[in-house]
Length: 112
Image 1 (cartoon, one colour):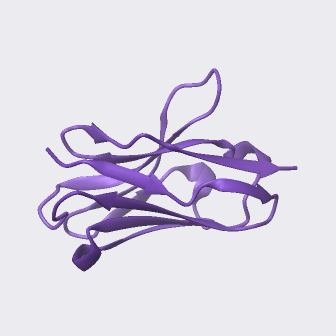
Image 2 (cartoon, one colour):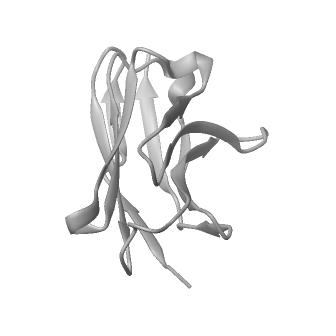
Image 3 (tube, helix red, strand yellow):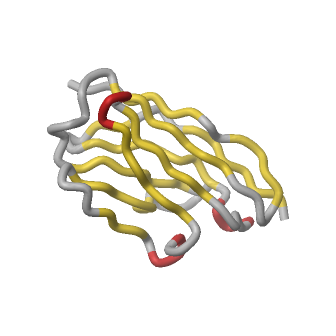
C-alpha cells in the first residue's frame, strides 16, 4: 500500500500563495487517481483537485482559476499550487490516492 506524506502548509495572508507537496512511498505512475481534499473545522472533507493517471484534472468550483494540481512521476510527488488564497481556504489539506489512501494532512491557515 502506498503511503502519502504532505508538506508545505502554513500561515499566509489573504491573496498570498502556497505550494503543497504530497510525496508517495512508491511510484505514482499507475495510481488511477491522486488528489487533494480539505476539511475545515465542523465540516465534511471535500474534494479540492484530482489528477488521473492519464493527466486529466478536476477542480472544485471554489478553487478553479486559483489552484493548480500537477504531478512529477519521477519524484513520486503530487503538488497543489494555491494562489489568491482566501480566508475560506483555511482547512487541513489531505493528499489522496485511489485505494483509498490518505496522508496525515497539512494545515493551511489564511489570515483575513
